[in-house]
Amino acid sequence: MQSTIAIVGRGRMGPALARALTAAGHPVVGPLGRGADGAGAGVVLLCVPDGQIAAAAAAIAPREGLVVGHCSGATGLDVLAPHEALGLHPLMTVTPEGAAFAGASCAVAGSSERALATARALADALGMRPFEVADADRAAYHAAAAMASNFLTTIEAAAERLAATAGVPRDALVPLVRASVDNWAALGAERTLTGPIARGDEATVARHREAIAERTPDLAPLFDALAEATRALARAGPEVPA
Image (cartoon, rainbow, N blue to C red; front, side, top):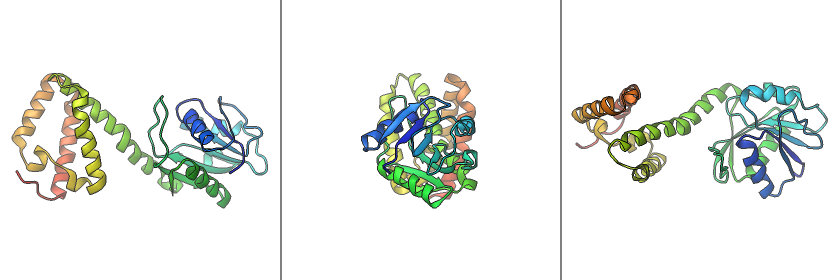
């Protein structure tokens, strides 16, 4: 992995990877704008929206020894044809402030043994733990990642809104959220679940529903869907003392 790495894409992922790979001692060019041909690089990483990957790959002239990769979680390698191709999807949220890749997992793929080895080497350089995801499984894998991260943020935003109606600030919820995630990581969902639904206290759940309908009525359908899913989880788990 002494080849120059060209990064195409100036959104969130591109700059974050450029900084991290540079810090790891790799020669990096970019992030470059869309349409860049990656001239002079041995590896070109496309950090562009999924719908733009094929066009970005087409802008790069195939040449011997070149490996072209994308950082999409849901997209297979076929969009990178005819290049020798790799996939590198850090399983980590990237904000405008950047990302901490070290310690995260990373989905990798390669159209050849060399391309796969390159993807693994990039993940290792960033301190990530690589694992392979087949093209046929990528949509399911990425959906799980979106649920674990994006949907969690949506739920916390809803909780924050409702808490604000009672004068409770967001930072009061933070230790609870962190403990819940840590418990889930250590014990799994079924052993982590607590609260009125897990205890079978439907009278309290009904009061929750009434408060939401009164104060944040647009959140009622979300509450209903989550309550039903939580009931199913509670039925599958150990009994929670009342």
